[in-house]
Image (cartoon, rainbow, N blue to C red; front, side):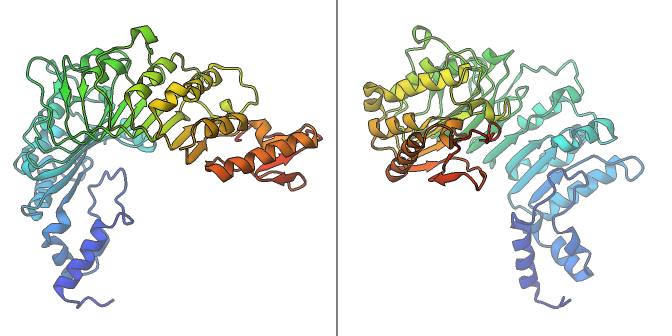
Length: 463
Protein backbone atom coordinates (compact mmCIF):
# COMPACT_ATOMS: atom_id res chain seq x y z
CA UNK A 1 0.00 0.00 0.00
CA UNK A 2 1.30 3.46 -0.93
CA UNK A 3 1.83 5.52 2.22
CA UNK A 4 4.05 8.28 0.77
CA UNK A 5 1.23 10.52 -0.40
CA UNK A 6 1.56 14.16 0.68
CA UNK A 7 0.41 14.99 4.21
CA UNK A 8 -2.29 17.37 2.95
CA UNK A 9 -3.72 14.80 0.52
CA UNK A 10 -3.86 12.06 3.13
CA UNK A 11 -5.47 14.46 5.60
CA UNK A 12 -8.11 15.32 3.02
CA UNK A 13 -8.79 11.63 2.28
CA UNK A 14 -9.08 10.87 5.99
CA UNK A 15 -11.43 13.82 6.45
CA UNK A 16 -13.69 12.51 3.69
CA UNK A 17 -13.82 9.12 5.42
CA UNK A 18 -14.35 10.71 8.82
CA UNK A 19 -17.31 12.80 7.70
CA UNK A 20 -18.83 10.25 5.30
CA UNK A 21 -22.14 8.94 6.75
CA UNK A 22 -21.65 5.69 4.81
CA UNK A 23 -18.68 4.99 7.11
CA UNK A 24 -20.72 5.03 10.31
CA UNK A 25 -19.69 4.57 13.87
CA UNK A 26 -21.38 1.68 15.64
CA UNK A 27 -24.62 2.95 17.18
CA UNK A 28 -23.59 1.65 20.60
CA UNK A 29 -19.84 2.16 20.69
CA UNK A 30 -18.94 1.01 24.19
CA UNK A 31 -15.23 1.23 23.42
CA UNK A 32 -15.03 4.94 22.48
CA UNK A 33 -13.55 3.83 19.17
CA UNK A 34 -12.30 6.44 16.72
CA UNK A 35 -13.90 6.12 13.29
CA UNK A 36 -10.44 5.93 11.73
CA UNK A 37 -9.11 3.35 14.18
CA UNK A 38 -8.25 0.96 11.34
CA UNK A 39 -6.36 3.65 9.41
CA UNK A 40 -4.33 4.49 12.51
CA UNK A 41 -2.98 0.93 12.65
CA UNK A 42 -1.62 0.91 9.09
CA UNK A 43 1.64 2.69 9.87
CA UNK A 44 3.17 5.31 12.17
CA UNK A 45 2.85 8.02 9.53
CA UNK A 46 -0.87 7.48 9.06
CA UNK A 47 -1.37 7.44 12.80
CA UNK A 48 0.59 10.69 13.15
CA UNK A 49 -1.52 12.36 10.44
CA UNK A 50 -4.77 11.34 12.13
CA UNK A 51 -3.57 12.39 15.58
CA UNK A 52 -2.36 15.81 14.43
CA UNK A 53 -5.34 16.80 12.27
CA UNK A 54 -7.83 18.65 14.55
CA UNK A 55 -10.75 18.21 12.13
CA UNK A 56 -10.52 14.43 12.67
CA UNK A 57 -11.25 14.80 16.41
CA UNK A 58 -14.40 16.89 16.40
CA UNK A 59 -16.76 13.92 16.85
CA UNK A 60 -16.33 12.88 20.48
CA UNK A 61 -18.14 9.72 21.55
CA UNK A 62 -18.13 8.63 25.19
CA UNK A 63 -19.07 4.98 25.62
CA UNK A 64 -18.40 3.03 28.78
CA UNK A 65 -16.26 4.24 31.64
CA UNK A 66 -13.17 2.08 32.24
CA UNK A 67 -13.46 -1.48 33.37
CA UNK A 68 -11.34 -2.07 36.47
CA UNK A 69 -9.38 -4.92 34.89
CA UNK A 70 -8.33 -2.71 31.96
CA UNK A 71 -7.62 0.82 33.17
CA UNK A 72 -8.28 3.25 36.00
CA UNK A 73 -10.75 6.10 35.95
CA UNK A 74 -7.90 8.62 35.76
CA UNK A 75 -6.38 6.85 32.75
CA UNK A 76 -9.77 6.86 31.02
CA UNK A 77 -10.23 10.57 31.74
CA UNK A 78 -6.77 11.29 30.35
CA UNK A 79 -7.73 9.43 27.16
CA UNK A 80 -10.93 11.50 26.85
CA UNK A 81 -9.00 14.71 27.48
CA UNK A 82 -6.46 13.80 24.80
CA UNK A 83 -9.29 13.41 22.27
CA UNK A 84 -10.74 16.79 23.23
CA UNK A 85 -7.38 18.55 23.06
CA UNK A 86 -6.61 17.08 19.63
CA UNK A 87 -9.66 18.89 18.24
CA UNK A 88 -7.99 22.24 18.94
CA UNK A 89 -10.55 25.05 18.99
CA UNK A 90 -12.92 23.55 16.42
CA UNK A 91 -16.65 23.07 17.11
CA UNK A 92 -17.47 19.73 18.73
CA UNK A 93 -20.12 17.07 18.25
CA UNK A 94 -20.48 15.32 21.60
CA UNK A 95 -22.34 12.04 22.16
CA UNK A 96 -22.60 10.56 25.67
CA UNK A 97 -24.07 7.16 26.52
CA UNK A 98 -25.31 8.30 29.90
CA UNK A 99 -26.22 4.83 31.15
CA UNK A 100 -22.66 3.63 30.57
CA UNK A 101 -20.57 6.62 31.67
CA UNK A 102 -19.99 8.01 35.16
CA UNK A 103 -20.96 11.51 34.12
CA UNK A 104 -19.79 13.07 37.38
CA UNK A 105 -16.23 12.05 36.49
CA UNK A 106 -16.52 12.91 32.80
CA UNK A 107 -17.65 16.46 33.58
CA UNK A 108 -14.21 17.18 35.02
CA UNK A 109 -12.67 17.04 31.54
CA UNK A 110 -15.75 18.07 29.54
CA UNK A 111 -16.46 21.40 31.24
CA UNK A 112 -13.60 23.40 29.65
CA UNK A 113 -14.77 22.32 26.18
CA UNK A 114 -18.56 22.68 26.42
CA UNK A 115 -18.41 26.21 25.03
CA UNK A 116 -17.27 24.68 21.71
CA UNK A 117 -20.07 22.10 21.61
CA UNK A 118 -22.21 22.46 18.50
CA UNK A 119 -24.13 19.17 18.75
CA UNK A 120 -24.95 17.38 22.02
CA UNK A 121 -26.55 13.95 22.18
CA UNK A 122 -27.47 12.08 25.36
CA UNK A 123 -27.95 8.52 24.26
CA UNK A 124 -29.33 5.32 25.68
CA UNK A 125 -28.42 1.87 24.36
CA UNK A 126 -30.41 0.32 21.57
CA UNK A 127 -32.97 -2.36 22.42
CA UNK A 128 -30.45 -4.97 21.29
CA UNK A 129 -27.85 -3.81 23.82
CA UNK A 130 -30.15 -2.75 26.66
CA UNK A 131 -29.92 -6.11 28.43
CA UNK A 132 -26.15 -6.12 27.98
CA UNK A 133 -25.92 -2.74 29.70
CA UNK A 134 -28.31 -3.78 32.45
CA UNK A 135 -26.64 -7.09 33.28
CA UNK A 136 -22.97 -6.33 32.67
CA UNK A 137 -20.33 -4.15 34.25
CA UNK A 138 -21.07 -1.50 31.63
CA UNK A 139 -23.98 -0.27 33.76
CA UNK A 140 -22.60 2.48 35.97
CA UNK A 141 -23.76 4.95 38.59
CA UNK A 142 -24.64 8.22 36.87
CA UNK A 143 -27.09 10.41 38.78
CA UNK A 144 -29.92 12.41 37.31
CA UNK A 145 -28.43 15.48 38.99
CA UNK A 146 -25.27 15.08 36.91
CA UNK A 147 -27.36 15.17 33.72
CA UNK A 148 -29.08 18.34 34.96
CA UNK A 149 -25.68 19.93 35.72
CA UNK A 150 -24.46 19.11 32.21
CA UNK A 151 -27.56 20.45 30.47
CA UNK A 152 -27.59 23.59 32.61
CA UNK A 153 -23.99 24.47 31.67
CA UNK A 154 -23.37 27.37 29.27
CA UNK A 155 -23.51 26.25 25.62
CA UNK A 156 -22.99 29.44 23.59
CA UNK A 157 -22.27 27.52 20.35
CA UNK A 158 -24.84 24.74 20.74
CA UNK A 159 -27.12 24.35 17.71
CA UNK A 160 -28.58 20.86 18.14
CA UNK A 161 -29.66 19.00 21.29
CA UNK A 162 -30.91 15.40 21.22
CA UNK A 163 -31.98 13.42 24.30
CA UNK A 164 -32.88 9.76 23.87
CA UNK A 165 -35.49 7.91 25.90
CA UNK A 166 -33.04 7.30 28.72
CA UNK A 167 -34.11 4.68 31.25
CA UNK A 168 -33.97 6.88 34.33
CA UNK A 169 -34.75 3.91 36.56
CA UNK A 170 -31.23 2.67 35.80
CA UNK A 171 -29.71 5.92 37.06
CA UNK A 172 -28.78 6.40 40.68
CA UNK A 173 -31.26 8.60 42.55
CA UNK A 174 -30.10 11.04 45.21
CA UNK A 175 -32.03 13.40 47.47
CA UNK A 176 -31.39 16.16 44.91
CA UNK A 177 -32.87 14.21 42.00
CA UNK A 178 -36.37 15.37 41.09
CA UNK A 179 -38.01 13.85 38.02
CA UNK A 180 -40.33 16.86 37.87
CA UNK A 181 -37.50 19.37 37.83
CA UNK A 182 -37.22 21.59 34.78
CA UNK A 183 -34.01 21.91 32.77
CA UNK A 184 -33.42 25.36 31.31
CA UNK A 185 -30.72 24.83 28.72
CA UNK A 186 -28.39 27.83 28.55
CA UNK A 187 -27.95 27.81 24.78
CA UNK A 188 -29.09 31.05 23.14
CA UNK A 189 -28.34 29.83 19.60
CA UNK A 190 -30.21 26.53 19.65
CA UNK A 191 -31.83 25.55 16.37
CA UNK A 192 -33.17 22.08 17.19
CA UNK A 193 -34.26 20.25 20.35
CA UNK A 194 -35.37 16.61 20.31
CA UNK A 195 -36.32 15.23 23.72
CA UNK A 196 -37.62 11.66 23.90
CA UNK A 197 -37.13 11.42 27.66
CA UNK A 198 -40.13 12.52 29.72
CA UNK A 199 -37.97 12.74 32.89
CA UNK A 200 -35.76 15.47 31.36
CA UNK A 201 -38.05 18.40 30.71
CA UNK A 202 -36.04 20.70 28.47
CA UNK A 203 -37.22 23.95 26.88
CA UNK A 204 -40.27 24.25 29.13
CA UNK A 205 -41.77 27.36 30.59
CA UNK A 206 -42.99 28.29 34.05
CA UNK A 207 -43.48 31.55 35.93
CA UNK A 208 -40.48 31.18 38.24
CA UNK A 209 -37.75 31.34 37.08
CA UNK A 210 -38.46 33.23 33.84
CA UNK A 211 -38.69 31.02 30.77
CA UNK A 212 -35.77 30.49 28.47
CA UNK A 213 -36.98 30.26 24.89
CA UNK A 214 -34.20 30.94 22.36
CA UNK A 215 -35.59 32.89 19.41
CA UNK A 216 -33.30 30.92 17.09
CA UNK A 217 -35.16 27.64 17.77
CA UNK A 218 -36.52 26.11 14.56
CA UNK A 219 -37.18 22.48 15.45
CA UNK A 220 -38.73 21.26 18.71
CA UNK A 221 -39.71 17.69 19.57
CA UNK A 222 -41.06 16.93 23.05
CA UNK A 223 -42.15 13.71 24.66
CA UNK A 224 -44.43 14.04 27.68
CA UNK A 225 -45.70 11.57 30.21
CA UNK A 226 -49.29 10.58 30.82
CA UNK A 227 -48.77 11.05 34.57
CA UNK A 228 -47.20 14.51 34.72
CA UNK A 229 -48.18 16.32 31.53
CA UNK A 230 -49.30 19.49 33.35
CA UNK A 231 -45.69 19.98 34.46
CA UNK A 232 -44.45 20.54 30.90
CA UNK A 233 -47.27 22.86 29.88
CA UNK A 234 -46.28 26.55 29.78
CA UNK A 235 -48.11 28.74 32.25
CA UNK A 236 -48.52 31.56 29.71
CA UNK A 237 -47.38 32.30 26.17
CA UNK A 238 -44.35 30.39 24.86
CA UNK A 239 -42.88 32.64 22.17
CA UNK A 240 -40.87 30.84 19.51
CA UNK A 241 -40.87 33.27 16.57
CA UNK A 242 -38.72 31.15 14.25
CA UNK A 243 -40.07 27.68 15.05
CA UNK A 244 -40.66 25.70 11.85
CA UNK A 245 -41.31 22.15 13.10
CA UNK A 246 -43.06 20.96 16.26
CA UNK A 247 -43.55 17.34 17.36
CA UNK A 248 -45.59 16.45 20.45
CA UNK A 249 -45.62 12.86 21.70
CA UNK A 250 -47.25 10.96 24.56
CA UNK A 251 -48.99 13.82 26.28
CA UNK A 252 -52.58 14.27 27.41
CA UNK A 253 -52.63 18.06 27.24
CA UNK A 254 -51.91 18.83 23.60
CA UNK A 255 -54.41 21.68 23.38
CA UNK A 256 -53.11 23.35 26.54
CA UNK A 257 -49.65 23.35 24.96
CA UNK A 258 -50.90 24.67 21.61
CA UNK A 259 -52.92 27.36 23.38
CA UNK A 260 -49.76 28.62 25.10
CA UNK A 261 -47.64 28.44 21.95
CA UNK A 262 -46.98 31.50 19.82
CA UNK A 263 -45.11 30.27 16.73
CA UNK A 264 -46.21 32.38 13.74
CA UNK A 265 -43.74 30.66 11.36
CA UNK A 266 -44.71 27.07 12.23
CA UNK A 267 -44.85 24.97 9.04
CA UNK A 268 -44.82 21.34 10.24
CA UNK A 269 -46.84 19.87 13.10
CA UNK A 270 -46.61 16.23 14.22
CA UNK A 271 -48.93 14.92 16.95
CA UNK A 272 -48.43 11.37 18.20
CA UNK A 273 -50.67 11.13 21.26
CA UNK A 274 -53.13 8.41 20.26
CA UNK A 275 -54.02 7.45 23.83
CA UNK A 276 -54.77 11.02 24.87
CA UNK A 277 -58.12 12.25 26.07
CA UNK A 278 -59.40 14.45 23.26
CA UNK A 279 -61.86 17.24 24.23
CA UNK A 280 -65.28 17.57 22.69
CA UNK A 281 -66.08 20.49 20.40
CA UNK A 282 -67.45 22.49 23.33
CA UNK A 283 -64.33 21.87 25.43
CA UNK A 284 -61.81 23.05 22.86
CA UNK A 285 -59.92 26.26 23.71
CA UNK A 286 -60.77 29.43 21.85
CA UNK A 287 -57.49 31.30 22.35
CA UNK A 288 -55.34 29.41 19.85
CA UNK A 289 -52.99 31.49 17.72
CA UNK A 290 -53.74 31.15 13.99
CA UNK A 291 -51.49 28.62 12.27
CA UNK A 292 -51.38 30.64 9.09
CA UNK A 293 -48.09 29.19 7.85
CA UNK A 294 -48.79 25.55 8.74
CA UNK A 295 -48.35 23.47 5.60
CA UNK A 296 -47.97 19.89 6.84
CA UNK A 297 -50.01 18.18 9.57
CA UNK A 298 -49.13 14.63 10.62
CA UNK A 299 -51.49 12.92 13.08
CA UNK A 300 -50.73 9.46 14.49
CA UNK A 301 -53.63 7.26 15.52
CA UNK A 302 -54.49 3.64 16.27
CA UNK A 303 -57.60 1.53 15.83
CA UNK A 304 -59.08 2.18 19.30
CA UNK A 305 -58.50 5.94 19.40
CA UNK A 306 -61.63 7.90 20.19
CA UNK A 307 -62.81 11.49 19.99
CA UNK A 308 -60.18 12.80 17.55
CA UNK A 309 -62.56 14.44 15.09
CA UNK A 310 -63.27 17.71 16.99
CA UNK A 311 -59.54 18.34 17.49
CA UNK A 312 -58.71 17.72 13.85
CA UNK A 313 -61.64 19.85 12.74
CA UNK A 314 -60.32 22.69 14.91
CA UNK A 315 -56.82 22.35 13.47
CA UNK A 316 -58.21 22.49 9.94
CA UNK A 317 -60.05 25.71 10.78
CA UNK A 318 -56.85 27.33 12.07
CA UNK A 319 -54.59 26.06 9.26
CA UNK A 320 -55.71 27.90 6.15
CA UNK A 321 -52.46 27.20 4.24
CA UNK A 322 -52.42 23.43 4.81
CA UNK A 323 -51.14 21.48 1.78
CA UNK A 324 -50.46 18.05 3.31
CA UNK A 325 -52.43 16.00 5.84
CA UNK A 326 -51.31 12.55 7.01
CA UNK A 327 -53.57 10.50 9.27
CA UNK A 328 -51.17 7.70 10.13
CA UNK A 329 -51.90 4.40 11.80
CA UNK A 330 -49.21 3.71 14.42
CA UNK A 331 -47.81 0.32 13.51
CA UNK A 332 -45.95 0.15 16.84
CA UNK A 333 -49.29 -0.41 18.59
CA UNK A 334 -51.02 -2.84 16.23
CA UNK A 335 -50.53 -4.50 12.86
CA UNK A 336 -51.84 -2.66 9.79
CA UNK A 337 -54.08 -5.61 8.89
CA UNK A 338 -56.46 -4.23 11.55
CA UNK A 339 -57.56 -1.73 8.86
CA UNK A 340 -57.76 -4.13 5.94
CA UNK A 341 -61.22 -5.58 6.45
CA UNK A 342 -63.81 -4.81 3.83
CA UNK A 343 -66.45 -3.50 6.20
CA UNK A 344 -64.57 -2.54 9.35
CA UNK A 345 -66.15 -2.94 12.74
CA UNK A 346 -63.78 -1.19 15.13
CA UNK A 347 -63.56 2.44 16.18
CA UNK A 348 -60.63 2.85 13.78
CA UNK A 349 -62.98 2.79 10.78
CA UNK A 350 -65.36 5.05 12.67
CA UNK A 351 -62.52 7.56 13.14
CA UNK A 352 -61.70 7.45 9.44
CA UNK A 353 -65.35 8.05 8.63
CA UNK A 354 -65.46 11.06 10.95
CA UNK A 355 -62.29 12.55 9.45
CA UNK A 356 -63.62 11.95 5.93
CA UNK A 357 -66.81 13.81 6.82
CA UNK A 358 -64.66 16.85 7.64
CA UNK A 359 -62.85 16.65 4.30
CA UNK A 360 -66.12 16.06 2.43
CA UNK A 361 -67.78 19.16 3.90
CA UNK A 362 -67.89 22.11 1.56
CA UNK A 363 -67.03 24.45 4.44
CA UNK A 364 -63.93 22.43 5.25
CA UNK A 365 -62.91 22.47 1.61
CA UNK A 366 -63.05 26.25 1.65
CA UNK A 367 -60.88 26.32 4.80
CA UNK A 368 -58.21 24.08 3.26
CA UNK A 369 -58.52 24.77 -0.46
CA UNK A 370 -54.84 24.11 -1.14
CA UNK A 371 -54.74 20.59 0.32
CA UNK A 372 -52.70 18.63 -2.23
CA UNK A 373 -51.58 15.49 -0.37
CA UNK A 374 -53.53 13.11 1.90
CA UNK A 375 -52.43 9.94 3.65
CA UNK A 376 -54.88 7.55 5.32
CA UNK A 377 -54.53 4.12 6.95
CA UNK A 378 -57.12 2.74 4.52
CA UNK A 379 -59.91 3.93 2.22
CA UNK A 380 -62.18 2.15 -0.22
CA UNK A 381 -62.10 3.26 -3.84
CA UNK A 382 -65.50 4.95 -3.59
CA UNK A 383 -64.17 7.35 -0.96
CA UNK A 384 -60.98 7.99 -2.92
CA UNK A 385 -63.09 8.97 -5.94
CA UNK A 386 -65.24 11.24 -3.79
CA UNK A 387 -62.19 12.95 -2.29
CA UNK A 388 -60.81 13.77 -5.72
CA UNK A 389 -64.15 15.05 -6.96
CA UNK A 390 -64.65 17.34 -3.95
CA UNK A 391 -61.01 18.47 -3.74
CA UNK A 392 -59.67 19.00 -7.27
CA UNK A 393 -56.39 20.42 -5.91
CA UNK A 394 -55.41 16.96 -4.64
CA UNK A 395 -52.26 15.67 -6.34
CA UNK A 396 -51.38 12.68 -4.15
CA UNK A 397 -53.33 10.12 -2.10
CA UNK A 398 -51.51 7.40 -0.20
CA UNK A 399 -52.82 4.46 1.81
CA UNK A 400 -51.01 2.34 4.35
CA UNK A 401 -53.17 -0.68 3.46
CA UNK A 402 -55.93 -1.41 0.94
CA UNK A 403 -59.40 -2.69 1.58
CA UNK A 404 -59.57 -6.41 0.86
CA UNK A 405 -62.49 -6.16 -1.59
CA UNK A 406 -60.60 -3.48 -3.55
CA UNK A 407 -57.69 -5.86 -4.09
CA UNK A 408 -59.64 -8.96 -5.10
CA UNK A 409 -63.22 -8.89 -6.36
CA UNK A 410 -65.07 -12.14 -5.74
CA UNK A 411 -68.40 -11.11 -7.26
CA UNK A 412 -69.56 -10.93 -10.85
CA UNK A 413 -67.25 -9.85 -13.65
CA UNK A 414 -69.19 -6.59 -13.98
CA UNK A 415 -68.29 -5.69 -10.36
CA UNK A 416 -64.63 -6.31 -11.11
CA UNK A 417 -64.78 -4.10 -14.22
CA UNK A 418 -66.26 -1.28 -12.12
CA UNK A 419 -63.34 -1.50 -9.67
CA UNK A 420 -60.83 -1.53 -12.53
CA UNK A 421 -62.44 1.54 -14.09
CA UNK A 422 -62.41 3.32 -10.73
CA UNK A 423 -58.73 2.58 -10.28
CA UNK A 424 -57.87 3.83 -13.76
CA UNK A 425 -59.82 7.06 -13.23
CA UNK A 426 -58.13 7.69 -9.86
CA UNK A 427 -54.66 7.16 -11.36
CA UNK A 428 -55.50 9.59 -14.17
CA UNK A 429 -56.42 12.31 -11.68
CA UNK A 430 -53.76 12.01 -8.97
CA UNK A 431 -50.75 10.04 -7.81
CA UNK A 432 -52.20 7.02 -5.98
CA UNK A 433 -49.76 5.26 -3.65
CA UNK A 434 -50.43 2.01 -1.81
CA UNK A 435 -48.56 -1.20 -0.91
CA UNK A 436 -48.50 -3.77 -3.69
CA UNK A 437 -49.17 -7.44 -3.13
CA UNK A 438 -48.13 -10.47 -5.15
CA UNK A 439 -51.27 -12.35 -6.15
CA UNK A 440 -51.61 -15.78 -7.78
CA UNK A 441 -50.79 -15.52 -11.48
CA UNK A 442 -53.87 -17.54 -12.28
CA UNK A 443 -56.09 -14.63 -11.30
CA UNK A 444 -57.15 -12.16 -13.95
CA UNK A 445 -55.68 -8.77 -13.02
CA UNK A 446 -55.82 -5.23 -14.35
CA UNK A 447 -54.58 -2.02 -12.73
CA UNK A 448 -53.83 -3.69 -9.39
CA UNK A 449 -57.33 -5.19 -9.09
CA UNK A 450 -57.78 -8.97 -9.36
CA UNK A 451 -60.84 -11.08 -10.04
CA UNK A 452 -61.37 -14.30 -8.13
CA UNK A 453 -64.87 -15.59 -8.95
CA UNK A 454 -64.20 -18.74 -6.93
CA UNK A 455 -63.31 -16.74 -3.80
CA UNK A 456 -60.40 -19.02 -2.94
CA UNK A 457 -57.62 -16.44 -2.41
CA UNK A 458 -56.94 -15.37 1.20
CA UNK A 459 -55.15 -12.02 1.56
CA UNK A 460 -56.41 -10.99 4.98
CA UNK A 461 -52.88 -10.46 6.28
CA UNK A 462 -50.49 -7.80 4.98
CA UNK A 463 -52.76 -6.20 2.41
